[in-house]
Amino acid sequence: MEKKLRPGTLCVQAGYKAKNGEPIELPIIQSTTFKYDDSDEMAQLFDLKKEGYFYTRLQNPTNDAVAAKIATLEGGVGAVLTSSGQAANFYALFNICQAGDHFVTSNEIYGGTYNLFGVTLKKLGIECTFVSPEASEEEIQAAFRPNTKALFGETITNPGCAVLDIEKFARIAHKNGVPLIVDNTFPTPVNCRPFEWGADIVTHSTTKYMDGLATQVGGVVVDSGNFDWLAHAEKFPGLCTPDESYHGLTYVKAFGKMGYTTKLVAQLMRDLGSIPAPQNSFLLNLGLQTLHLRMAQHCKNAQKVAEFLHASDKVAWVHYCGLKDDPYYELGQKYLPNGSCGVIAFGLKGTRETAIKWMDSLKMINIVTHVADARTCVLHPASHTHRQLSDEQLREAGVAPDLIRLSVGIEDVEDILDDIRQAMEKI
Image (tube, rainbow, N blue to C red):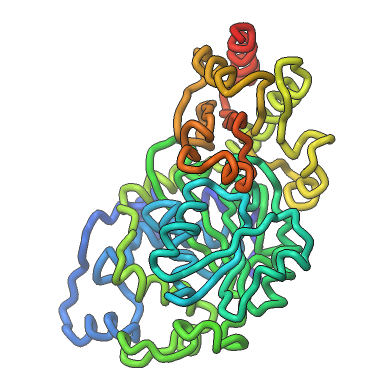
């Protein structure tokens, strides 16, 4: 029996293994297409009867190696890289939903995802119902319809820092014969493995901690291989009935546990093409090699910063599940025993202008849209990422108008605290 490697080793070693005389670092296969001497061989590739590479929009060795690493880290059977985290969430749902379908989602999700689900997918004929993740199982159950195809949530919400009760959401999803899709961007598989708690599909914005250095934009969809699509075949015709665009091939019958990811590549990537460049996947892989080290430092620094903010008389409230009086402390201990992430949500005493003045007084900490970077950065969502939402929608999405999202980096924590202190003195 092959030895099961630990996450830190997988971050470095999984996905690509150099053979004798080959480069130790993952090569960048920066080519759109691949040559064959036999036209019948290429025909078999197009018919999905043979594995291989013929066009990078569908598959590329560099992209596939990095996808394989992330699938291994999450404990999944397969993964597909996308051009952004938003694309990953779109593909994860669109792979099983079509016009006339419906899904249920936590309302405490990233503002861009909220808009994607509530506005853009609606234009494609796919509706969703937003529910509070703190609602009772009965209340969430009431949101389900006969045409509901999935339940969605974020393990740690962006930007509110709430912790999802994954087991509760998985129980509700499976009771209704649909998969639970979880965005695991903030804790990463180093700190949370949703498949072990019942989730079926995991997405990430790889732009965040997985990259860690703000060098590339990307996303990934990972399939656990655990959801039995054929047991609910009437709900998922795209996976369980013949695809006429592939000569009547039925994905889950032809590819088993790889049916979901095969369809995502063969059908959605073929037609929509939101792929990452191989160069971007190479950069992502460099970030993944230190993910386990960086996450530990992010969490260590963030805990100290959260404790400082919690003790400050200028701070109205702090949300960080590492604080013992945080409402999500118990869920954090259950799902994130080794730490959550470096993101803290807090509010200052005063007005919205107080938050802006404090942010503008920072010297080392960067005001940026980005989050989950090696550098400490800050954002006021109501003025920036979530500015398309009304105050009522902000609160529904778990975003208080005074919320400041502080993404604690891996610098020396005393320098981070010094900058926070000097800015506090200006308000």
